[in-house]
Image (cartoon, rainbow, N blue to C red):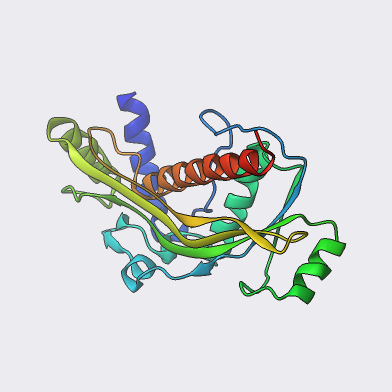
Amino acid sequence: MVRNSILMLAMLSLVGCASLAPVKYSLGGDLYKGSSSGKVLLVSVLKDTRPEAEHTGQKSGNMPLYTGDGDFKPDVALQISQQLADHLKSSGLFNTVILQRVNDDLDTEAMQKLSDQGIDYVLVGNINHFFGYQSAVNGAGSFFGALGVTIEAMANPKTAQARSEYTDLKMIDLKQHKILWQGDVEYSFEKKVTFYDGAIAYSLQGLKEVNNKLARQLDEALKSEAGQ
C-alpha cells in the first residue's frame, strides 16, 4: 500500500499541470440501485453557478490543494452533467437517459415537442458546488517531494475535503405538465488521511455521493407517483 501511494504521488508530480483529469468515476461498487420506472429521462446540461474560487482553484507546486477548472478537461459543467446522466442510467431508475441542452423554463409547446420524441421526464437545475481539497504538505512537486509527501502524511495525518451540491433541481413530467420532484441535493465530507488520493479524487468521491443521494430521492418520487 505504501509503495502504491509513493508511485501514485510521484506520477502526479511528474505530469504536473499537463495532465487534465476527466470528471468521471467508476459506476460500479456502491452505486445506488433503484426500481425501474421504464421511463425515458432527459438530463439538461446543468447551469454552472459555482463561486469563482471553485473555478480558479489553488495549487501547491504542481499539486492541487483546491481543485479548479484547470485540473479537469474542458467544460466542467458539461462533464458533471454527463456523469450525472450516466449515473442515473446505471442506477436502473430509467429505461433510457440522454443528455441535451434545454431551457429551464419549458412552456407547453416545448414540453409537447419533447414528449413527442418519446421523452417522459426532463431534469433541470444548477451546479452550485464542486471541489476537492487536500491540505498542503512540504516537498510536493518532485519525485523526492512525493516521497516526502507520503512520509509526512503517514506521520502527521492531513485534511481531505470535498463538496458537491445541486440547487433548484426539477424533474418535470412532460405528459402531465407538472413538476414531479424538486429540491436541492448536497454532499460533503471532511476527514483526516494518512495516504493521499489527491484533491481531484476527493472531488469525484463527493460527486458520486451527491449523485447517489439524488438517485435515491428520484427513486422515492417515482415510487410515490406510481402509488408504491
